[in-house]
Length: 278
Image (cartoon, rainbow, N blue to C red; front, top):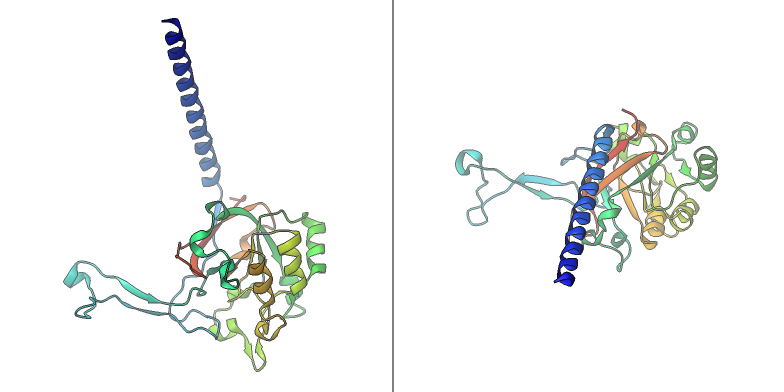
C-alpha cells in the first residue's frame, strides 16, 4: 500500500503546487491590469465615413442601410426591430493596417498575424522640426542617427511611428495635398526604411498620412519604396493615425488589433496607445 500512498501524496502535492502557481499567475495578471488601468489611454484612430481622405487610386467608401436581399427593403428599427449598415470600402481606408501581403504575394495576410504582434513597445520619431523648413521632408538616416543619440537605439520588434502633425489637417484636399506632379507629403527616404526594416528590425512603421510613403511615391524607383521595403521584409504599415503629439518618444505601448480577414491585404482598425503619464 505504501507505493500507492506515496503516489497519492505526490499527486496531491503536485496539485497543490499547480494550484499555487495558477493563483500566482492570476495575481500577476491582476497586478499587470492595475498598472495598465492607471496609465493614460490615447486613441490614435480617426473616425471614418464616406468623406474620409483616401489615396486617389481608390474610391470613397459607401455606407448604406443593409437591406433584405429578397425585397431590397432596408431594415429599420420601426419595422424589424433592428438596423444594420452595409459598408463598401477598400482595406486601405481611414486608419488602417497594411500587412506584408499588401505588396508581397507570399506575405502574411490579415488572418495570419500573430496575436503577440498586436501589443508591442512604441517608438515615436518627431518629423515636425524638419517640416517647418521643408513641408515635404522625408525622415533620413541622418535624422534617425540624431534621434538615437538622444533617446537610444530603437529596440527590435517595436512599432515605430512618425509624428508629422498631418492629422490636424481637416480639409481633405489639404490632407491629400495633391499637386500637379502628385501628392506632397512627408514620410521616409528609402535608405531609412531599409535601415529600420533590416537593421533595427522594427515590426513596422506608422504615419499620419494616407500611406506610409513620402511625396510622389508612385513615380519613385522602386514605386512606393517604403511599402516595397517594409512589406518585402515581412513588416507592416499603419496609416491615417492621429494624436501622435500626445505620445512620448519612448516608453509607451501600442495596441493594434486588426480584423481577421481570410487572405486579407489590408483593413481599417482601432489603434490605442498606453502611455506612462497620467
